[in-house]
Length: 361
Ligand code: DC
Image 1 (cartoon, rainbow, N blue to C red):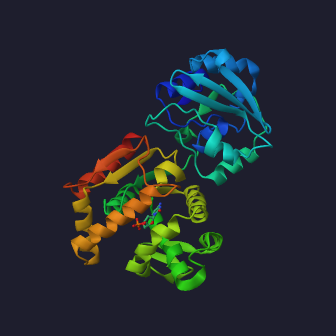
Image 2: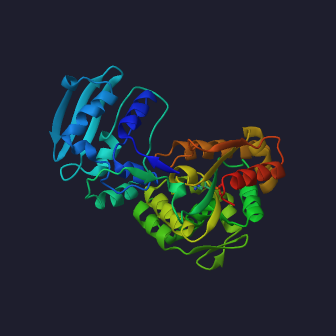
Image 3: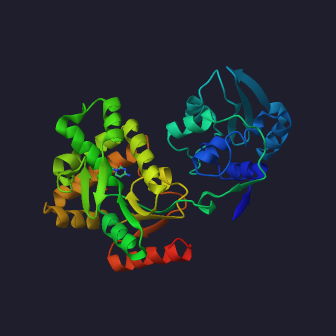
């Protein structure tokens, strides 16, 4: 599929969808995995485009004011649904990071839709490459790019059945299984062993980039040592949410995972695979299950009481969902599968069928 980018249509759709935040520009699309060159869509800098943007926003030209801040120009306008700010050119005076966080917004009230960007490092990288202003006629959807990584993303909360399902799907369709939770657990174990200060994100980030994490069948190796059992110890489980919330750690893990995806075909279990690590994944599954079922499964695995497991799961869910970066959430285009009361075989067959239907496996 080749998709024609109709900017006016895009804006109209976004306005209709009552998005909370819209990052406008090619960097935003590129961050989401679209095949556009940075700068391609920064056409808001062209004065003759402003009118069509305003029309799409149903704003009267006289309600819009140009504001210059540093080298960035901001179009402030009032429309029926609220105020709209569009940054049209960002360089010099304001960092793109600030703009992405605060300024390239179309604020349209409290609608549920939101267009998100990936990691700030990625935005920085994209921005560093800006320099063209031509207008693309077509853009290729990420999953349709030749040689696009074949990734099936299986995300969801603890105890939803991710490990069992992901492993079985990988085996069934001949892809490699990747457990991203184990990667975060390895970094946490290394920190608990004193290889970095628990409260020093820079040091932990460095460790997350330099530690050698590898998989041999079902075994997990940290710098060559078999840590399969050690990374599942309760003290590691307890500390992971804290360690995995550091942006420095997430950036390192996301980079490492993307690096791996370049080399093969993966079925990946995680929390942010479909939303952040591989937003272009041609198949995203969000596995979930009722809280009781999840606690029951974990208790069976660990031998603890259902009550204590339930409390721990609840606490970890809350932390995973609340963190600022890569919070546990459902990708817009994910297929949500509730595994409560369903057999593993059933779920695995359903995922494998979807993979076949989409031409992935
Ligand atoms: O899936 P798990 O229980 O092994 O994950 C361990 C922890 O790592 C969990 O608290 C969430 C975190 N994690 C994460 O933040 N991002 C991922 N992609 C995978 C796991």
